Amino acid sequence: MMLIRYILLLEAIVLQAVSGHLIMVSPEPYSKETLNNSPLAEHGSDFPCKLRTDAFLAPSTETVYQIGIENIIKFKGSATHGGGSCQLSLTEDREPTKDSEWKVIKSYEGGCPTKAEKLAGDATADNALHLDFAIPEGINPGKYTLAWTWFNRIGNREMYMNCAPVTVSGASSQQCHKSIQKQTPNFPPMFIANINGCVTKENVDIRFPQPGSIVEHNGEKDHLLREGEPPCTGTPTFSALAAIKSTIPDLTKGVFGEALSSTTSTALARIPTSVSSCRAPRRN
Image 1: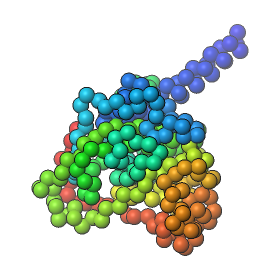
Image 2 (image 1 turned 90 degrees about the vertical axis):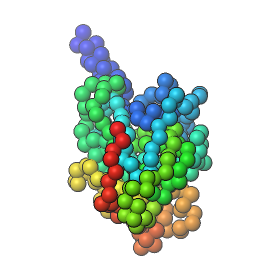
Image 3 (image 1 turned 120 degrees about the horizontal axis):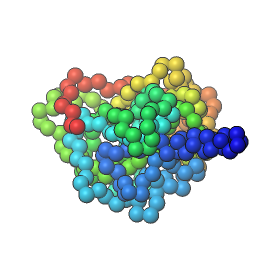
Image 4 (image 1 turned 90 degrees about the horizontal axis):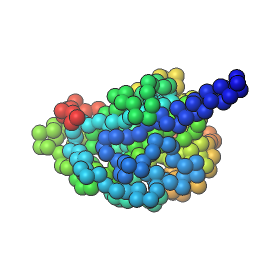
């Protein structure tokens, strides 16, 4: 009897871990009826956007973001795995493939979307989890696919990815135009790991080798990957970084597990967080 109780308890724990993962609810993702909250497949077979049958059915109402206006990405779920690091990226492809070009518009290094190891409830729990962001100047108005990617700090080495169709509208002339113009846009490729042979380190919030111009830090300082350490180790079978390394000879050393060279350090120079004195009203 004790053995049966132990097995049932173990099954309950496993079920809770599987069923409580986070899922993006706003913007409304593609094919939300068939979207589950599990990570991407270990070998990347469902990358990008959790590929499946009819993976890119658009919602009845598409989310519209105006350039420069602050918005939030909303989530539901409870298994937050101690947070981790996330990126928000855009592609012009409305049905993305492995060959799609993603532009990172914001990186969150630590505490994404929270520092908590676990929150109350199950997969449907509304714990008011969200990420603040704005479509930056330098992105053209038009139709895009927005992706949220997440590398959890605690637990299995995984990559989560949810995608949504969005429309980007032009900036208002009243949005402190001069202040925005001074920022130099930098939209690097999306970081990919844990599904391609390059594995992130557990119990740390990774630093992205190319975080882009806008970076936010919300985690514990002691959890953040030390400067100079690679974000993942191993040779990727596919990756935006793998494509870049062919043009920068020393890049392999810095990204995939060996010591950084001076050439690599220059090639992967991190861009400071952009700070604007002008903040537009948030769109809820």
